[in-house]
Image (cartoon, rainbow over all chains, first blue to last red; front, side, top):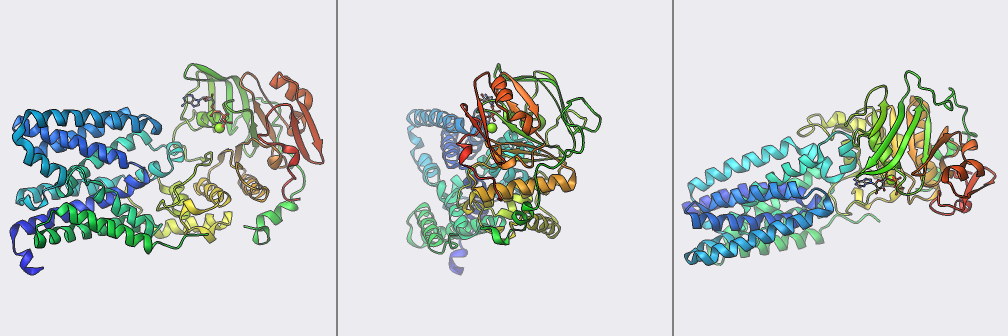
Length: 267
Length: 298
Ligand SMILES: Nc1ncnc2c1ncn2[C@@H]1O[C@H](COP(=O)(O)OP(=O)(O)OP(=O)(O)O)[C@@H](O)[C@H]1O
Ligand SMILES: [Mg+2]
C-alpha cells in the first residue's frame, strides 16, 4: 500500500472516499429505518440532471449536482405529505428529472464523458479542492445528524409517539431529506448515480444484520462503507478496472458475510 | 411468557371486584383539579362530523374505558387531548389547561404497529425514547438513562428481553415495552389506544393490571380505548360509548344494559351477562364474540 499511497491522486481519492463513505454509512442507518431506498435513487437521479444542466450552462457539474439534490429533497419533503403518498411524490419528481437529463444529454453531445463519470463515479479524478469540499460537506452532515440524532430516530421509528411527544415529525423528514441530499451528492462522486445504493443502503443493511444496538449499527455501517471504498480504490489502482465495480462487489460480499454471521434469530 | 413467574397476574387474583370509586365521578359536573374536561366539544375531520357536544369530566385517578364502533372517533379523542387535532367547537382541558403537543404529563400507548424484524433497535431503546427521545443530540449521560430504563423494565417485567431486537418480540412482549415507554416519563394521564389488540387472554390481563396498578399507586388517570370491555371491566370506573351520532358515559353496570346501549346505538342491542362477563349481541361492540371470552385471571 505504501507505494500506492505515494501518488497524489490516490491520496486524494482515499481521503474523499473515506469521508464520503463515513457520511453515507451514518445516513444509511436512517435510510433503512425509514425505508427510503427509493428516495435515495430519486435524489441521485435528480443530481444527474442537475449536473448535466450545469455542464450545459457552463457551470461546474458538482454545483449542479448538489443544487439539484437539495431541490429534489425539498420537493419530495413538501410533496410527500403522508407516508403512503411519498412513493408517488418521489416517482413523479424522479421521472421529471430523468426526462430533463435526457434532454440535456441530447442538447449537448460532448457531454458523454461527463455523463459517464456522474453515472458511474470518478473518484480517481478528484483533486485537493474536492478533498476540502468533501471534508466541509461531510463535517456538516455528520454534525447535523449528531444534532438531530434522538428526535430523528424517534420520528423515524415511532412516529405516533414522537408526534405526541411534541417532535415536529414532518419537519424532521424534510430535515433528513436535506441531510440525505448532501450525503447522496457526495457519494455520487465515488460510485456514481447508478450505484448509489452500494454506499447508502448496503453497508447499513449489512450492519443491521450484525447488531440490534442502534449506535453500534451506525458504527458498523460507517466502517463497512469506508472499508469497501478503500478496497475499491485499491482494486481499481492495481487493475485499472472501474472503482465502482470493486466497491459494489465488496459491498455485496460484506452484505453476504454479514448475513452468514448474522446475530442468531430469536425464536 | 406463561404465568408462574408473573407477580402481576398472581397479585391480580386478590384484587377483588370493581374497586369503589372514591369520588362521585358520575355527575359530570366540572370540578377543579379534574384530569380532563370536555365542554360541548365537537370534532370534525375533513369537514365530516366525528362527535358533537361531548361534555365530560374525568377525575384524577379515574379509569375511563372508551368503546364504540370503528370510525366513531376514539383515536381522535386521544389525539385531541394530545394537542394534535383541534376541536371545531367547545373546549377541552387537560389538567386545567388547553391541550398542547409534547405535554410531559401524558403517557401515550398508540395502536399497535409492526416493527421490521431487522430494525436495529432494542426494546430498551424504545423505552428510552419515551424518556429523552425528544431531546437534541445524543445522550450525554447514558448511565443515568440506563438506570431509569432498567427500573421501569423491571416494573413491567420486560427486563428479560430488553436487549432483543424489537421487531422479533411477540405482540405481548412489545406491548409491555410500550407500557414501559409510556410510564417512564412518570405521567399522570395515560392514553391507551387498543392496547389489548391481538393479545391472548393472559397478556390482556397482564396489560390491564399493569396499567390499573400504576393508576392506583400514582393516582394517575387512564383513558383506555378498547374493542372488548371484558378484560377491563374490573378496572373500569366508567365507560364512555361513542357511536358517531350519540355518546353516553356511565358506570359499567349502568352502561352495559340492553336499554342504555340500544338507545345509544339507535338499534336493538341485547346485553347478556354471564357471571362477571358481558356480551353485547346484535351489534359489533366487541369486535369478536365476547361470550367466548373467559374473565382473565380466573
Ligand atoms: N387524518 C385524517 N384524515 C381524514 N380522516 C380522518 C383522519 N383521521 C381520522 N379520520 C376519520 O375520522 C374518523 C374517526 O377516526 P378514528 O381513528 O378516531 O376512529 P376510531 O374510533 O379510533 O376507529 P377504530 O375503532 O377503527 O380505531 C374516521 O372516519 C376516520 O376516517
Ligand atoms: Mg382507533
